[in-house]
Length: 433
Image (cartoon, rainbow, N blue to C red):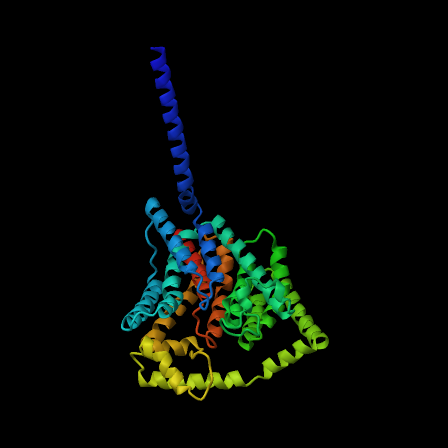
């Protein structure tokens, strides 16, 4: 009997140990699920980080699509668990749905093209989803602080590599694909991980605006970044970026009420002046490059020719636009006298007219009119951080829309930043209402 009792005890102990290991294995496997549900804002900024380092010209095993799918899955699962409704704002959701439907229907008429679907996802599908996900995620001050930390780190990184490029410190630039001249555009400028100088400049400008508006524990970091920001903007060697930054800095100084921000903007102006003077007198090569870039006429003439060709294409099909397969081929045919690697319209508004006709530009206009209206909807009960975002929101949109005159905005990270902030503003309205 004693032997049988010992055997039973040993067997029970063995089963207890096995159960214990099984529970531990289950806990390890479920831990990512718990973290994703508990900290969706961290998951959100992680996805934005992937967008930052995944330019359109670099095929990184579709890492951005994986990050996007994971983010949407966890936020949707969390919303179902908490019984939250999918946010819907007619003035914003309907125009975005309209543009997305036009783009998808247009490309469905053509044979499958992975690049075209990637562009549609970057311009319409991902921003639409990010806007609604941001409404669900950024509803509290803790979540907005997570985004503020991301903004600060992203700005510091972009400023650092832009200045490193300007100083010709190529060994400090990471990731290395930024220096690969066979990828993207503008290898002679500070183009960042976007591989395009305008996208880099717009990101620097928007992040610079956000770093002042979002809550920061150490304001001195934001001020130091703003002192270095003019040099990083200068390194893009892009006139549209220079103009947008100069005007946004001046308007920001008058728009913000706090004296310390006015002082920061004054210091920024002085730092910009000193940087330009120092460059002009001490670096002959950089002085020559700036002079050549300022006086350069070739790109302007080529861009005007593209505009003429695009406008002619729009006039031929003002309501239906051109099919996805024929648009770029037709634009290249009409630009046969120019030796360009790729043919794009280089203007967001004209591109909408050529692609979708008048309905596309009309939907875009309605969308951004309603986006501007978010700055008018401030309520007495909202937090100080959201109120601060509302003050700078028209400046941020102005920077985006001005630069859209000179590039077709197809950059996932740039568009994602804009619609993330829009989601934050709408989340605040939803909670107060």
